[in-house]
Length: 368
Image (cartoon, rainbow, N blue to C red):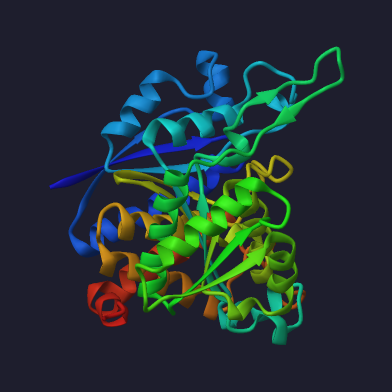
């Protein structure tokens, strides 16, 4: 039985890193005896150029029929006018809404091999292994708004319904129950009415998970503690905008946005998987972009949408091995290391998948 994967390369370095992710996916297929049918379709700026809109109907329809979606990145200087009627980021928001993706997972794990890549002191970041669970379809990005007008007034409204908070809270507590049993809920309850609803609702949901501990943090305190004691966090549950900001801050704990994957999930399939980084137009076409965030996103795709857990572990094992062997792209290379390019990093991870094989991957798959 084949699995259908829709690939949305997007803009900038998106096509470059996605190619390496698909390379690793094919290595998984060869090693484990799977078949993946891959279809490339436009989104973002590339779609605007091709069709006039950032999310063509054909693209959305194909994503709805797929088993999973792999996304590169969107946007760039060509489409950067914030006053334009049609913008690349509208395609991403419409994709999330069209697929009902309300939960965004952003794992942040600092591997020992990359300890020197963090801009912070080793004692501040060693042992960091956290998961940001970001609510994705509510909050200030989707509330009532007014564009700047002649009256000089503009506004964006942070709105949450209790039902939206309940479903993302359950998601976070279930996940924490499979990890280390701690949910840190982020809000601004001392100032915002929506923050008080968030805190009250999350507290009520927590009663259904007696084996998971809950703590509340104001968003400004959370930003500070990420830099002071990152290893103390397990699952961070956040509203949409706060999660957007905090997850980017957390990404720098490991040294580069290029290292981190993400998964956007709803009820059932498909999910959308993408690196945390943007389109990086300043390095597009140079062959130096870090594909590891995309490759690890393929691992999340295998785990969450296809329920191929050993295969997902094989991707993680391969990435760890290549990094432990000292290979680095320029964004995380130390002065004493000669960096490798995007394609070579993808080649090495794919080769590591094939070398390890299914037996080693299954041996490393967590149990219980």
